[in-house]
Length: 410
Ligand code: SAH
Ligand code: SF4
Image (cartoon, rainbow, N blue to C red):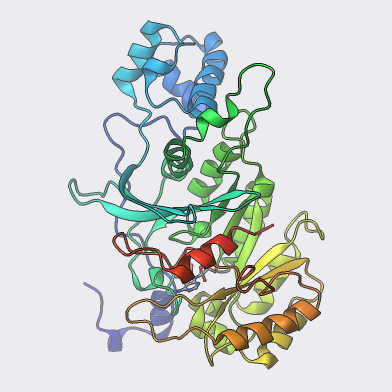
């Protein structure tokens, strides 16, 4: 049993307020899905199915192509493999995607899937969300990395939930695969000989769904490496953006081991306020966070860090804040995404008034950041889907606008 609050030392309380431990472990099913396996893991799986080592490389390549270029949803369609091998594989594995519990399609083409993942206790599953946001020049998929979140940001609905468990690499890749299934996206690139293949609908990924991706580092790294593989799903790292609330040591690691684009949830320009909005700031204050950003590899004007800034009325939206924001980011190749606060039942904040967002964005714009609110109204306000949470609720106009704009991370 945990000690009563009064009996805990202050440092325990701080730690408890910042990070939570997962309540559950992932329990692999008797027949695991090959979706999300690395090439090495696939090779091992083939070994188990009796494929001699000298053939494994070629077979891995064939299965990879079936899974991630053609979108094979069962072994029977993998006709490049012998019937016997297909049967051996089917006896041990599946190519199952995560289960979709609900799907919402908005008039503007935004789609939201409620994804049901197995819990540690049989019959007690957990839900996360995955959202597809179409734009004229791209389609962005917002992917979840954890059930719940390790952290407790005070304006975020996910932050009020306990961290239930980390997603596996397979469940991360599975979100991309199931989006391509649902959007009939596999067929698009399969043009007849001589014809230009159509562009895929899912062209970009943002790790901005439920969870803090840098607190599920290995699964996110391994999953994204499958997603970025040029012989498979082929969504280049330039088109993948990982959003973090500021897990400083893992920012450098992400630069070295993942190599995607980076988005940082800044939301405040002083430690005093950021300590409240993003409590992880007490562990990794602004100075350290910005230093880690400056050192992120490969930054240039063409490759900027996106700084997310949620607009909270009377909290962080003064024009002095805007000027301080610009000063703070000086010297870092940056984009600034102003996110209109999306209220949730029980939230104590309000979204800034539109006029205030425009004035704030004017200062940011005049400082050379070509991002925030310009005409047409709301077109360029960027937002994220970390705040999404309900299966039954219809996507509100604000949510849709925010989501559409969110798709613009590069
Ligand atoms: N945990 C990661 C990624 C998921 S959240 C992170 O915090 O960066 C994605 C983005 O949505 C973050 O910038 C987060 O601060 C923002 N967000 C969360 N709740 C929100 C809300 N209610 N309204 C607007 N943005 C919100
Ligand atoms: Fe977690 Fe991100 Fe929400 Fe903070 S904003 S509680 S890090 S999901």
